[in-house]
Image (cartoon, rainbow, N blue to C red; front, side, top):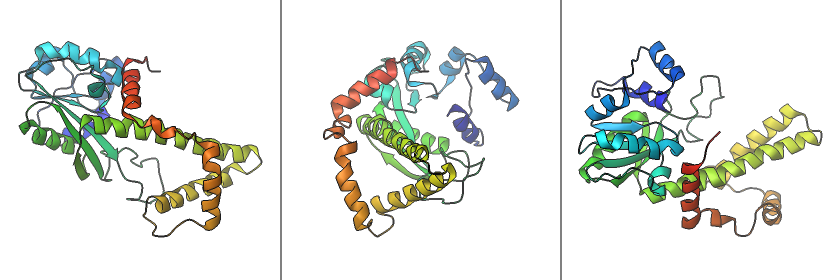
Length: 269
C-alpha cells in the first residue's frame, strides 16, 4: 500500500514528500524508482502529515517511536482503523490522528476480463474507488485536510464517506475480513469440492465465477430481478446447515473490539 500511495502522491505538485523505509529490499525498490529515503526522526520532525503504511501489529511501536518528535499540530494518517480502535496509538494531545481506508474499485464498475495489469486494489490505474475517512483525534479543521490527502492517496475517487473509527472497524475487520473473506474462502472450497467429485476444474471455475457475479448482482439489487424459485428454496433449506444461528455475533461491538486487539497484538506470518 505504501508503494501505491507513493505512486499517486509523487505525481502531484502540492506535496513535498520524505520517504522512510526500514528494509534493505524496500529501499532498493525505491531507489530503482528514483526515490531516496531518509531516517525516521528527520522525516517525522519536518512533516505536516505522516502516513503510516505499516502493518497493524507494528502501529503501536511505530507511533511510540515517532510521537516525541512529531511537530505540534501535525496529522498522523493511519490506513486501517484497528490500531485506533484497539487503543494502541501513542498518546499525544497536540497531534491529530486521521484514518482513511480505501473501499477498492466496486465489483460492477468494470466488467472487462481480468489481465495481468488489472487493478484489484485501486489507486494504481484508472479504476475509481470510494474511501471511508475518520477523524479519530484532533480539531475539526483537520478533517478536510486529511480528506484531501486521502483523496490524493487513493485517486481516482468515486465517493468520500465520513464515518467514525468504530464504524470503520465494524466494516473492517468485522464485515469484510471476519465475515466476507470467510464466506468467499468457503466459495472457493465449494468449487474445489465439485472438482473432487469429478467436475473438470476449468468448467467448475467458469461456472462458479459466472454464477457468483450473477448472484451478487441479484442479491445486492443491481440486476433488478430475483433468483429462481428453485435457487431460493435451495438457499433457504441449506442456510442453517452451513451457518450457525448466531453467526451475526461476529459483527457486534464486543467481537469487533476483541478482533482488533488480536490483530494488533498478533505476530503475523
